Image (cartoon, rainbow, N blue to C red; front, side):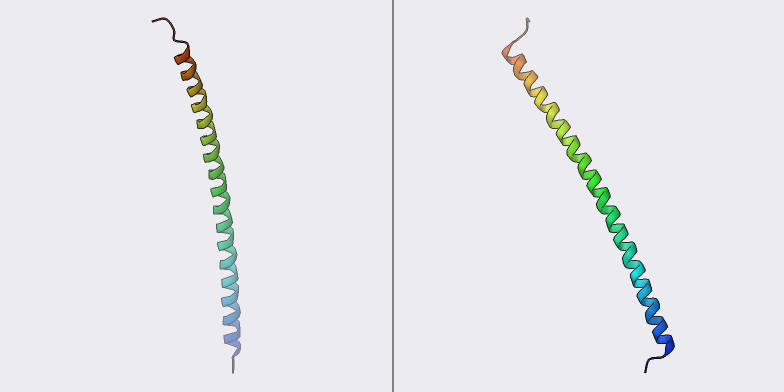
Length: 70
């Protein structure tokens, strides 16, 4: 036979568990959003580096085809 104290303890435990779950989900969502932001920044930097390397390669090819006076 369950007493009134057992019922209130179970309810408090369930409330605590639900609160913990909500906080954990919020933390995971925050981390996921931060990861997505950092990931986007990294890809943007990589795209910029690729563009700059392509420009450098084009300049080097142009300079090798048209050597200036020495």
